[in-house]
Amino acid sequence: MSEPEESLVLARAKLNFARKGHGERCWDAEPFDDPDGIRGNGCPILALSQAERDEFLEQARHELRRAPAP
Image (cartoon, rainbow, N blue to C red; front, side, top):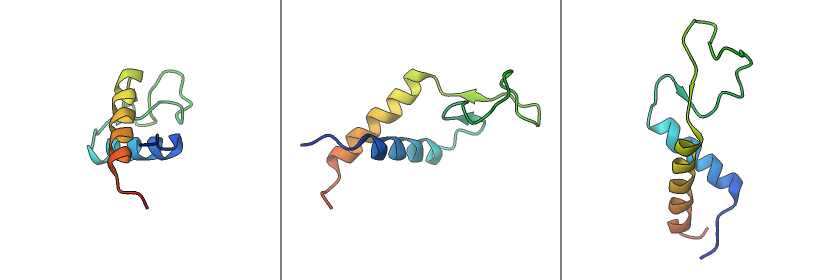
């Protein structure tokens, strides 16, 4: 069993994250340039921790390994 491409792993992990509907959470804060971590509407940006992202990435790897070959 070969390891899936990292770009596919990241895409699947972000899709899984989005499907879980985490409300005010975001994958990471990089797209937001505000150094205080506040969006324009005054709500804080609550990015996943690296450990939380790693869990989504590992789950995505697992799913892709088990997926039937195209």
